[in-house]
Length: 142
Image (cartoon, rainbow, N blue to C red; front, side, top):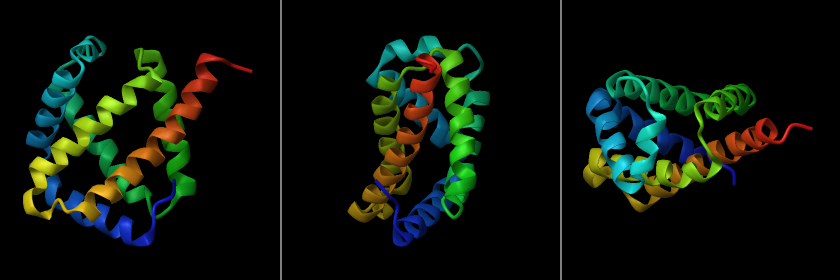
């Protein structure tokens, strides 16, 4: 799945609306994630506030990286390798994506249109596809 130029514009605009409330958005994301799959809480050994800042920084990097996918892919591959070491599995991407979409819906309110949702879904799939492919390499090396 690819991301269109219009979707990139929607992603950047919508993320800019959420970014000023980054701490609250991250807290909502993790509450939602753990409601969706309580077992995932076991993967987080550090302070969730600190983890939330990392999440928002990574989202910001991914959003900005949409203009240069050749630079974004290696960042996502490195992130995937680190996540394998933390115990993250490829089947964790669905709850994470769903928690992110819920967080965006809450944070954006009326600005969360069907078009914005579709744009975020495209980005979530892009990120997940790159990361899952790298994680599969880490789990089953050639």
